Image 1 (tube, helix red, strand yellow):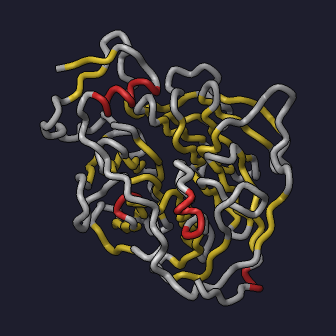
Image 2 (tube, helix red, strand yellow):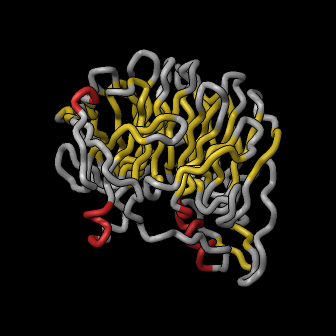
Length: 352
């Protein structure tokens, strides 16, 4: 066995260098869907107002609560979690210096306004109550003093353990409060826990067959408790029932980097075929758009293109769709969050 003795993001590099099974990240794909209506939209300029000497790094996660407050999870000099009010005015920082913050991946807000942070670097999912206090922790940060033990090159990855994550990516819940975690870069599975954090089951192994996953990168649940998983490197969305049996596959909207399902009586699924964060110019003209879909996979329309200006998207990593016509979009390579206003009643045909 080999060990790495540094911590944080360096651990991730150590795993790769010392022979952990590689994650096949497909070249970003042009969506198969054609002749999709274009949904007109606008972007609100300068929506977030940061205080002096406070800056966003990569826009990794964004979510809103029932009051319209906005939570932004960002990779900067440190991983940080900020709260803004409904007008974009800075309210506070949550969890500054927290042991579980190292390399942000997603933030979500549950129906009770608890805030959940998924940290890829510490292998932890952290639940904060609305006041910003930690009330539950899933997973555990690897001990820096011991380093990380990884499999020897060429050997099989050990089976996933119930309470041990390997670079988790997202979290969601059903109406009963059961918790679902997409896990992730290493384990290629979805794990289900009860509302108290007790393990129930998991599904998925690395591969491309039905029910297998290759980088489950984003996730959302609908009102019936179905689980939608953005199987990014397999270029598809897989839909599981509440017991984690596969129900459907949607493979026509490119590589799903970010997904969101709106609340309310008529739910919509939003999927981003994001411009990749390697900034490969060959992908510029075939990526960047976000799809609005019915839950059965029918595409309603799309909007957006790659770029760094307002109304353009530069590596969308998370979408908030609490209001289905007012989206919040976090972007990695533009270091920002955009507030997007959709005008779906004016959708026009597209030749793409």
